[in-house]
Image (cartoon, rainbow, N blue to C red; front, side, top):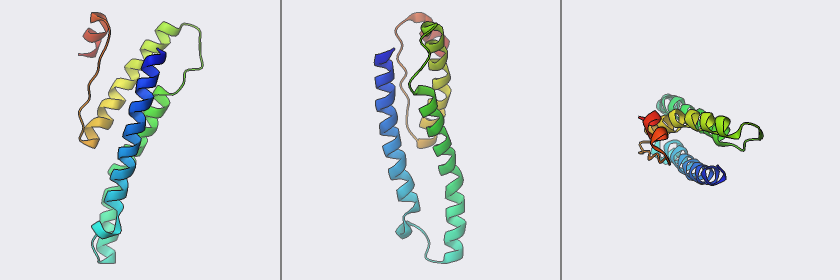
Length: 113
């Protein structure tokens, strides 16, 4: 479980770095129209999807954050892992990326499909 946590945390850091660069690119003044009213409309159009990405990123942080409960580790860890999959899938989709999911047993693979 600790190894999985390390992989998820490292991957999330990469996603956060990419998201910051993407947000900076879209909101860069040189990429926006020169007319102030058109610029305001364009920023408004960009903020909705960017804010949705920010919310998904925040949910991922909560999903893969450190687990404080030590009782019933196996059932809680598998449930949290399953909750991570749809969030990460949506985040990757909105970023235009692909997602690779690996698991160790056939049982887990069958629940992913």
